[in-house]
Image 1 (cartoon, rainbow, N blue to C red):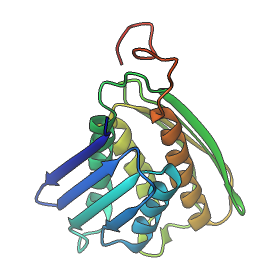
Image 2: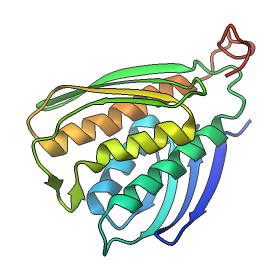
Image 3: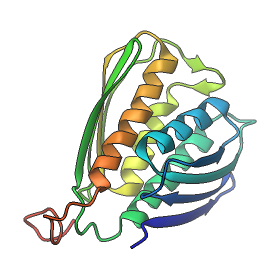
Length: 195
């Protein structure tokens, strides 16, 4: 069964179209208008083995906030749609990812309840043309639209580029683990019988 979602979101601030395949090969075609953000999403796709096609037209003449936040909303919606009824998935995933000076931990739970715990402070306000405060906004939007728990903790780091990249890649690896099928799970992994 294909686990693919296609989501379009149109507002006065952004126009977004995304196609996400949870069982892909890590192929990405991404254009958000923010080069550094594209780089992060391409890393997410590659390291999670998700095929991601994304086109965003946002009000970048204002700033990057709406573009980044709304992309998070669309990605969260696509994850929720693609994972479906969650039967047979592992539900939980976690990863600790190093990149030079940076070390980030990410743990996720596809539990049907939104929650973000984000313990990261970046040394720089900007990386390229990207406002580093938007990293938290992005993951907040993902957690709420996907109805999932996301915990991110920066364990070490000095370089903002490296630190943010470890967060995106650790999230990708954790999510890949959580959406993986496990033959031992016959229904959903919950004593409640639903997620």
